[in-house]
Image 1: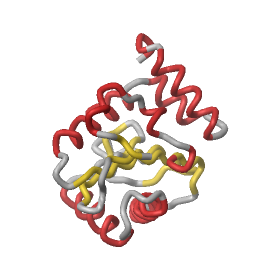
Image 2: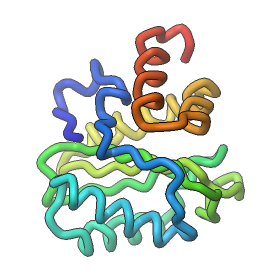
Image 3: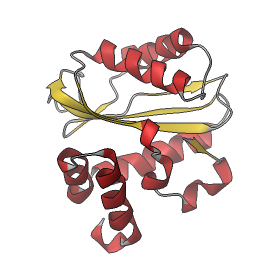
Length: 166
């Protein structure tokens, strides 16, 4: 799903997560498999045209410092010269995997992010917004408990429309 930079402050994550951007109970067994799957999905959804280049960029970012932020969450992210707009992907893994997270705990929720190469401010705004949401116990419970994509999106919408819950 695409995000237009001037609208970020008014956007909610449920609005960014079209059904093709959400994948539940994925059988991925390594960080590398998550990065490859994410690059493939961003390519399939038309955000970039070269999955290999995106994968390599995401892998390089992970080699600098893990994007595993703790509490079972990884936020692999990278700028791309191919991206015209920012895009978000949500993956819930069937089984937690080692992600070299800051708290050394395995990751079961992955929120991938790709932004245009020179959109540094947008990149930072999105990371901050995603990180804030991931610190909400209700947000995390919704992701971990949802039985299907529609339920997940509807529950996120209800949560984000009542900001006192966050």
